[in-house]
Length: 239
Image 1: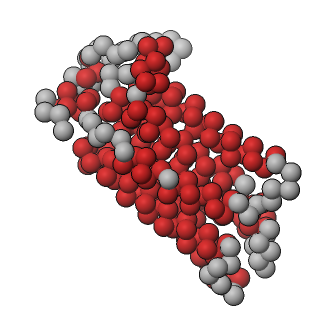
Image 2 (image 1 turned 135 degrees about the vertical axis):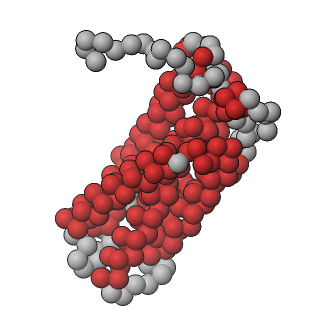
């Protein structure tokens, strides 16, 4: 890379790649004016930011439940497994993007809806509305539900990025990636800032995770489904 790093390949990888994109500042101005850009950003920032920051405070939440055997070491091991599974889920879905093509919004809705259902069930266990007497059963259910919920949520991340690029074309991908990452960090900061409120406790974290997935579903449904870049590459009519 230090010796030779070309600024572009000798031939464009697709038809749309050869088309001129908006400049960075101009792209941000267009994003600020776009309803769909805001909706996809909110979906991405809330669903991904809250879920990943929630995992970072998993120890605080589970230790407060005072379940026998659920120690800091056990929770830390669980967090490591969840992180790896979430990454692999994201890679798996990203590798299969070509199979979704013009069905990305539908797949995102399905993934976030399923994750919301998993999170609600997990919250009912943590709030002791669903009673699990055995500590070993509690550990198994926590593993299964948290792995499933986080994997489903993180699997929607590459789809949300790709769907944002399609919807906001010809805004450059780098501009859209910056837009999504900026708001991801803002929502993450907002989540962590709540812990600075005196005597806030940890009980609220059991509600915020399912809510982050639930409110994301209607927002992504409200996005106008457009595949502007894909239509150029496939020479097909807009849908």
